[in-house]
Length: 275
Image 1: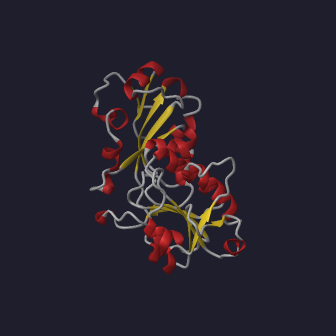
Image 2: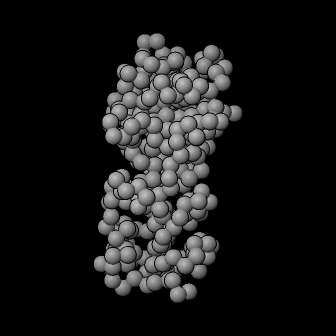
Image 3: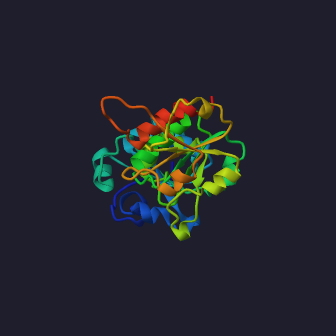
C-alpha cells in the first residue's frame, strides 16, 4: 500500500502530532476547527470511527500492520500510515506503544446542552473535575451504567485528552457529552438555572448536614435527574449545593468519609441510572 510510510526521520513535521504536540496544542481552543486528538488502540480507534470522527494519519508498530491494525487501516482509506519497529516508536513517542497503534483525528463539533439533554432522563454533570484519569473513568461508568449524557464545566479536563480517552476505553465516543457554561467568563459553578429549565431535578453529591442517602425513596421516584459531581480536592461549590433540589451522600463505614470522585460516580450511576 502506497500510503504506508516507514519512519526514517524522527524530526519529520508529520510526526509532531504524536511526538511533540502538547494536549493544549492539540486542543487548539482558539481555532476549534483545527483541533485534533489522539486515539490509542484498535478498539478505541474503531469506536471513534463509529462515532463519525475523521482520521488524518495513523502510527502503527510494524508487526501489527497485517494483524490487529489491519481492519482499521483498510477502513481509514488513503491517509498516511506511519510505521516502524517497537523500539523506534518508543523512542519517538517517549513511552511504550503497548497497544500497537495511534490515530490522529479531527475533534468533532460538540452538540449543544439542549440537544443532548432533549430526551435524556439521567445526566451526569462534572464541576471542575480536573484529572483526565477521573474524567475518563467517569465517562466509562456513565456509558456502562445507564447515564444518557455527560455535561462538563469549562474548567474540567477535556474528555478528548489522550489519557482520558485511554482510561474511558473509547466510551467518550459512545455517550453524548458537551460543556455547560461560558468558558469566556471562566464560570466555576454549574449553570443550575439551565438544568432546571431543561426539566431536571438536581442532585449534588456532597457531605452536608441535610444530605439524604443515595437510596432515598423520593429521589428514586424522580423522572429526570442531573447528578452533579465535584472536583477532586474541594468537591462541589457552595453555590451549586445551595441551588440543588437534593444533596446526596453515599453511606460509608469504617470511618471513611468519602470516595474518589470516579468511584463515587460509579456508585451513584448504578443506584440512580436510567434503568
